[in-house]
Amino acid sequence: KLLTRFFSGIFQAISWSSLAAKPVMSGKKLPPISNPLLFVSATQLAKKIRRKEVSSVEVVRAYIDRIQEVNPFVNAVTKDRFDAALQEATQVDKLIEEETGGEEVLEDRLPLLGVPLSVKESFAFQGMPYTSGVVSRRGVVATVDAPVVALLKRAGAIPIGVTNTSELCMWFESHNHLHGITNNPYDLERIPGGSSGGEGSILGAAGSVIGVGSDIGGSIRMPCFFNGIFGHKPTPGVVSWENQYPPCTGRHEEYISNGPMCRYAEDLLPMLEIMAGPKAHMFSLDRKVDLKKLRFFTIPHDGGFPLSYPVSKELMDIQRKVVERLEADLGVQVQEVCFPELRYSFQIWNTYMGLPDKEGKPPQAFAELMGEPGRPVWPMWELLKWMMGKSEHTMAAIGLSLLEMTHVSKPSPFIIQQKEKLQKEVDKLLGTDGVLLYPSHPRVAPKHHHPLFRPFDFTYTAIINILGLPVTQCPLGLGEEGLPLGLQVVAGKLQDHLTLEMALYLEKTFGGWRDPGAN
Image (cartoon, helix red, strand yellow):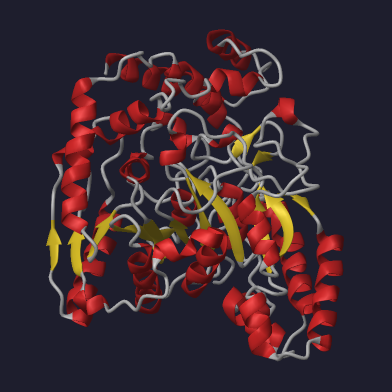
């Protein structure tokens, strides 16, 4: 505990200089959406393309135009493939013209035919940069497609570019010294989250309609929350995690999930079904859900972890409104519950992320990843270089490598006990028909670099990874400052279909994604 407080102090004491420069985008705002195609879900776009109501070229061109319009503001897309995407869209339109089997055949075989897709840059995508924001990986290009990318392409989706991440995907601000800093489309002086922050930003800005993210501590859900979009972290072990960087080591494969990110709730389920490939049946996505027959629970906060912000009043208020609407609309009772173990969420996540695999091999050290393909970095030396403006690494990455030095070889029996108790209680509570509402974060999207002062605020999402539960991030309109509100909807293991149905209900009830450029 003392070491955690010490390194938290280091984060805070030396990060003031990060705030000194006035953001270039101060006072600027995204242009409003002008093309009506950008207000159509991927599911409906695919249908329109199959029916020849609109061409794939028109749709892809609309998104290319929007990216070119907004990316100078948000810096979300780090490498595009516009020419290749337009060529592929042309081939799609030709295929549809020549298809003799009818619309149903195309829908069954190619459900996303002609729909544009953005991809988090940490996924291998053949022919595209594959750096995860590390300067030493500049010039690394993927030679294969990650399975989730390949499956979406096989379903007919057309990738239009790759998007920014935090350095090595282990921080909740998407900033690195290779591609720069990504901005929130609702307020360009604020963060879009991380590590899938480039995805969250370009989706929120309507520069993409569907995207791919990964999540080991909230990397899908925080960007979705901050950018007012939908995202789903599936039950782990179903969707492939292969061919992404950094690779999974230790027991990380038990906690990481790759999942869909999108602006429209109806796109979550078909995307997840495609991304799960041959294991999709494990999610029971074809099972009908009657929300009136579910049991609902709510937890308004974690009980008070001293190193994170308390949940803000406006986020507690919106969660209370969700409870009120559920009770009024569905005739259900939403029970407020409390788990004292949640106040140890950071310690639980940090402990389990450091556990060795079944062969006793520990996770690859963060300092090693920072130094690849060369020798591991020395965190204290890297910190001194950073203070002199000579480091190739961000303060967040250096801080994480310093925090890693506090890991002990033997995990705390107390923390292991807290996790096991929490796991047992939550699994029993949710069963196969329970849904839990839980805050996504203590506050709305922070200003750039401010997470350095509160580095442990991600624990509201991180604890769900360690518990191995499916969770859908749902937007709930805009708050007092015009920033997105939202919450996490959690269910029991492999009950992903419950939270996806809740996303549809909440979108209908609270309005879903909003155009950040609108007055």
